Length: 249
Image 1 (tube, rainbow, N blue to C red):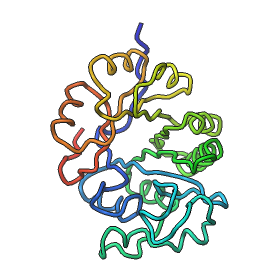
Image 2: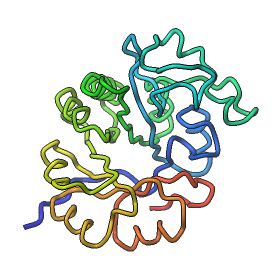
Image 3: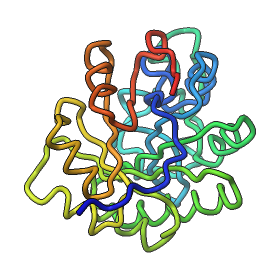
């Protein structure tokens, strides 16, 4: 017997890391550009500084997306806040700083935008990061009409997030449909599963739906792939191509 699907206030189209590859990922400049393209929901990556500040960055190391080096989570916010997180992308964005989750929350709440926060722990800090991100998100979005969606590839991070802020919806990120994936998502109290888009087919969508789980996909950059997911009736499409897809529905 199918479980009823949870209430779902989020739009289908979600801009990956703000504006995909058009701006330096996980910076406020990227979220502003994504909004200029009509997107009203964004995905970001959140991790912890050494002194417990929740900030946005995908990689464990600073090297790819900033002018710094070393592991971001091993450095204090006083140092991380001085890093140039835009110059690697283009001269236009040189000097763009790493933002805190609090700064992105102010932007989203002021403009009515929604957010998918991927909990991206520095290896070894899964539970600590999950708890901190959830606690801060719960505080920042207190009283907001639509809370952020918390997702992670790390079950321990999601479990800690559930303990810290059980009212915030969660989604399990998967790069393979490993044995027991549905039971794992349900045991974590998830509302959604977020898969590599190629993993969804009629059988996996049907199984998730029967379990009461919404179905989201990353990272969808081709029209044929997007149309396949729409035809399957999935609930969310995370894309880099904010310049290609008009975010309707």
